[in-house]
Every structure is written in structure tokens, then in C-alpha cells.
Amino acid sequence: NTTSGGNFNSQWYFGNGDSSLLQSPTYVYPDTGTYAVTLIASAGFNSSCKDTALQNVTVHPQAISVFTGLNACRTDSITFTNNSSQLQGETYLWNFGDGVNSFIANPAHLYNSADTFLVTLIAITPSGCNDTTTQYIIAYPIPVADFNVPVTCPGTTSNFTNQSTLQWGTF
Image (cartoon, rainbow, N blue to C red; front, top):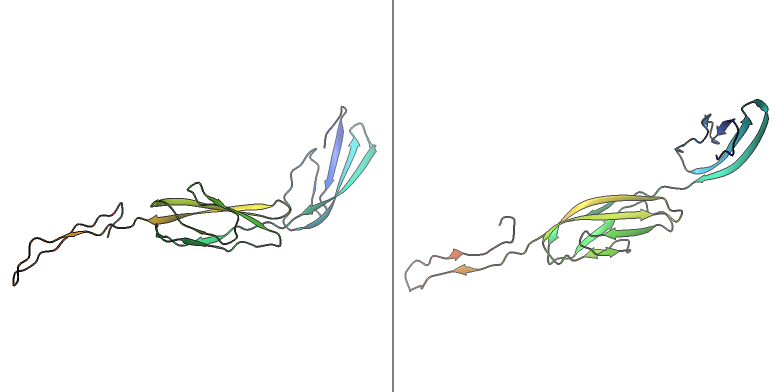
């Protein structure tokens, strides 16, 4: 609602029984559907001087972004399961938190390093309604197995010493 000089009043009818007297209101529709929105603009000095505009407003379905992914060893590919709304024509944008993206609905990803990564999934409907969800995924480090055993003679006790290492975490 843009004014070009003058004083006027606005009456908005949002097509579902709700209304507003604000000049340029905001409104949140609770449900999808097509609503016949009416604006009645009347001159502030004489309410009989008025004009009406009618326009259909379509409220499209909202995407709902949901996924699961299980923590795994760095050398194992992590499969992400997309549990989003999956409306017809919905597209997906994954960001795995390591600079790699994917547009596949249910991707698998192999991390090059052990770390905690913030994974993001954006679900986008054909009309542009989108939803974003994030989840931390851990790519665990791989231990390096090693041990030491001193010279061993027959009939003597052998003492094995575990010298394995792990980048972080515990065995």
C-alpha cells in the first residue's frame, strides 16, 4: 500500500475472516490455500470517496527439513537419511560442514579428517518456501595400533606394552 500524497484510511480483509486497519499491515496465514484479499482505501476527509482492490494470495505448502546421520569413523562413509516433507518437486541443499555440498536427497559423505562437523539441510519447495535444519556429526579419528615387546626367551614372561595412539578421544 503506497500513498502518493493525501490522507486516507485503509481497511484490509485477508480472505479468512481476519482484517486490519493498518496502512501497510503484515499478516501470517495459518494454513495453505488461496485467499481473496481486499483493500478498501478511503479518503480521510470523506469516507464515501473510496476505491477497492482485490487480489488472490496463494499460501504455498511449507517445506519441513529433517534428517538423520550417525556418527562414524573418519574412514567410513556417513549416510544421511532425509526425512523432510518431500513435497512434489522439493529440492535439497546439503552442506556437510567441511566445504562440500550436495543436491542429492539422501547422500553419503566421507570426511577427510576427524572432527565434529555442523551439517545443514535446506529443503526448498518449487514455490520457494524453505526450511533449514542443522545437526552435529562426528567423524571419529582412527587409532594407530602399535605395541612393544622386549626380547622374549622360552619359558619367560613376555610383557607386551600397548603403544597405540589416537588423535583425540579415548580407547
